[in-house]
Length: 353
Image 1 (cartoon, rainbow, N blue to C red):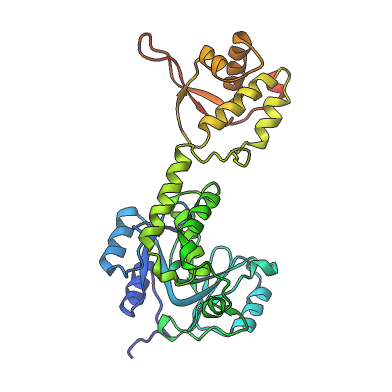
Image 2 (cartoon, rainbow, N blue to C red; image 1 turned 30 degrees about the vertical axis):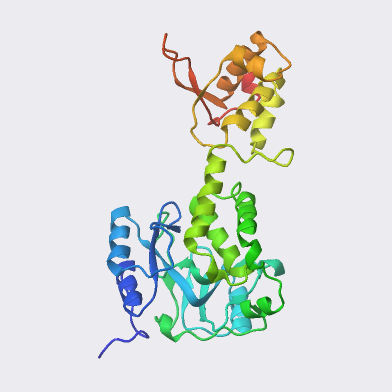
């Protein structure tokens, strides 16, 4: 008997990828920590099957992404059967369902791009749509062992039911003139890039956020290319790496709460806290950044309220507490000690007294 999409099962992601690609699906190789990071340069063009498979093999990855052109995925971050049934009742029955490490993916087709925000209703659910969006595909295995298991009845993206329900579509939003007009798109993206860049893990995540903003909020979103958005993301990411995101009193930098408890609250820890804030502001934006500390130079360039002796004590305190470490020792005639900001493995206030 000839196998059909209804009764096919696969032993690995490679076979599933080949099947979906041969049906016409647009797929991308993903990987890294949680298996979700795109491993190729962002593009809306369909990648050759060989590119997908070879990139996965080269990176030792067993996850891949399905690009969502004319596909909507209800991404439920909850294992609740009741919540899943509620979404099926709301959007319709679908034969393409995938159990994920955190919940469930329900796949649908759409004619007009739906704009649905379920998180605003209090649900731990994202609705992912559009050619620039993707979800990890079935038969993927993450590096931590989490699996994406197909639990539907028809392993074909060509026979998805159209998503049902009463929701806003892109065309309705354009008709209501609530989208960003063409003359303001670049400025809006630039502002959004600066807004997002402090909260993302890498440039790819920033790029994906900007793509989503373009697709959901812009008139004629096709008029601004993926390459233009990548350039804006790259510009904003370089600002972050070079610590050039300063915006007067509105700028922020991150401080570990535990650092406050350990450093500031320790006896005689206030000098060390002042120094730690200064170093975090100057160097904390880039993990692993090395720097030297010239005591006289610091005291002359910054209004610390203490002198040389207390500055030396503050440095020693941060070294002892584990929030500062020496990465290269002093070499006469070449350089002084080089430091890095760090976090302690196990330290308490009592141990520093």
